[in-house]
Length: 461
Ligand code: ADP
Image (cartoon, rainbow, N blue to C red; front, side, top):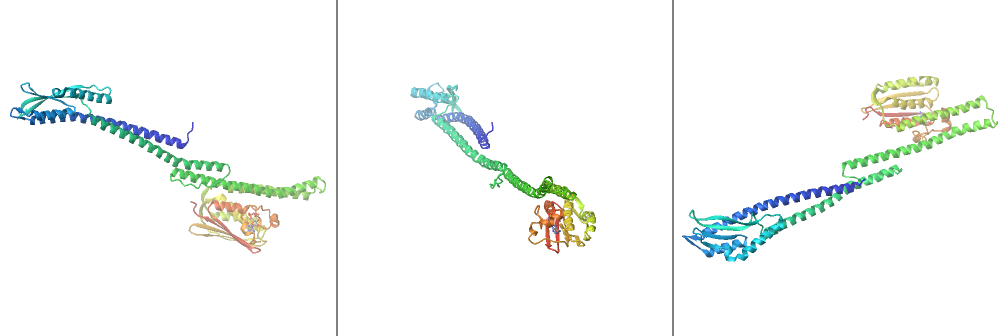
């Protein structure tokens, strides 16, 4: 069963804190009790020694200060110790049991019940230690000290232990409560951006390309947000390209297809004789359609393909080769080509750059007037290489100039129909130059000519 991240985090937080609090409570309780028992045992020994030494102080030259000894005995009795002092001749100087046997009995029962309540398996019994009392290093008496052994807790001891345990319990409960709160807080901080990201991702899959605006202070989540935003941006772009392409293609195909259709219909209906010329014009339309489909294929390829096959090559040499391939059509049109091309090695996609330049030179040839001039030159700077392709052809009007890189855009429809172009060449060129992070600009004047300038970075990062 899947649980939410928030639940999982909170539960694990609680488990960890419960476990550690319990462990700390048990260990500290155990250590404290052991230490306390040791302290109580030592205390009995210390108190016994104190009693013996105070009794010794009340002997002087063979006689006892019985009154003082009784004081000592009564005080000891209050602290749970039953004293009996017997001199060398076996005479009892003071005996707590004789003094108050009832109190002695009560006291032993009280401490036994104290111990049994705390440790139900406690094995205790009345114990009596015999100590030597000395005067000038000679034995003067035996001091019998009886108590509930091996050790006992007074009421104050029990109170102290209970307070300690209570404090440990309160601290444990507080710690658990705080950790539950902290757990919820932290898991909220982690899970709420994730929930938002997943909601946005769902929206993206439904075609709502919105940008996730939240910022997370968790590095990984921030990265996730950035990736989703990038993905959304790219999808949006793709979607736009796809829609536009379908629209443009439908629009472009409609005209030649309807011409073809009406021509064929007219021939079938017997309105037109299916003469060789008419069939030829039908074939031309079909060929135009074929060319258009080929161009569309190229365009989608370049617009969608973001991977460049980068190699180092001589751009000057490439330009010369391309110009050579145009030689025949240039001669046919009586064009003069002037070149000023330098050798320069660039790091780029050779085939794509060739395609971009072919399109520009092909336009220059296509739109040149018979006997015109085409000037092709390069200028190199530190980071870029500029290629200039200038013709003295028909030029482009100011109103068309901003649109010529748009797909299927042709300045002066009717005139361009004759040149056979579909208005895709410059779109392809621009896509290729954009892919190389380069730039393409145009200067043109109607009836005077045009100049296309492409700038390509020498090194592609
Ligand atoms: P096409 O396939 O029609 O040549 P392009 O995208 O290459 O499509 O060019 C778009 C339009 O820009 C052309 O139809 C033409 O009107 C204009 N154009 C492009 N290059 C030149 C040029 N060198 N001289 C004059 N007009 C040009």
